[in-house]
Image (cartoon, rainbow, N blue to C red):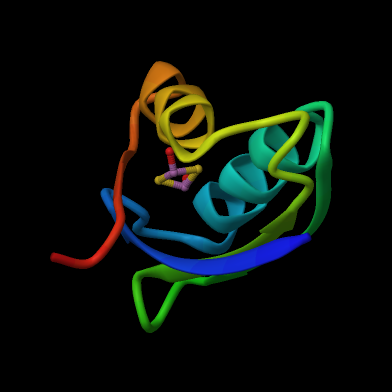
Length: 71
Ligand code: 9UX
């Protein structure tokens, strides 16, 4: 299990926050997601054997938001 904090861009309301949460939560291997609208961040705990950061980022981008690991 790994826990990482991502920067998320494009969220402007609570429904955006819920959209991002739902889209990451449904990925196979994701155990926990906590999205902060105010901080523009999300913390994701996942099984590295089942899912990778690239897939998590791609899922968020697919629904119209930005996600990236901090540089
Ligand atoms: Mo709120 Mo976000 O009305 O895509 S859901 S702006």
